[in-house]
Image (cartoon, rainbow, N blue to C red; front, side, top):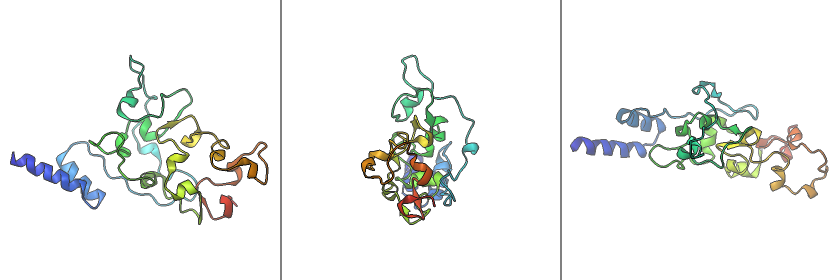
Length: 200
């Protein structure tokens, strides 16, 4: 009985520990399979993922279907929809490494860190590449443009550009027109040293 009380006290202490390293040390002492803390990476020099996913376990096939037609991953995580051919998957989600983003024992919707800090653990400070910052990035609303699990577009975008851009930007007010427009040829989507998020 006393041992159980001590274990609960240590577990509670780990939950409120000031540093992820202290939390990991305590939890890994008590429990098997606790993932190591994820370190924040330095700002990338370009709009690229700052950490390679090659260190993750080998990719599995897209989520499988049960006899009832429900994705096996959907049972354990929140999915925006059932996967279809051509979907792009967030590597930790594809490899069913939910603990990269979600807390253990707290439900699948509980995040390890608040947004955008969670995204910056792997993707670097895409908000610090220049003084001009896109408003969703300023507010830490990565999921305004990106789906965190799977999406039908590259970079996990909810819609392809320019349709995604036109959810907020009025195409009628663009000085250069919208014929065959490719926003990302000239603009960066997160932050830039140039006004209007221009690349140069």
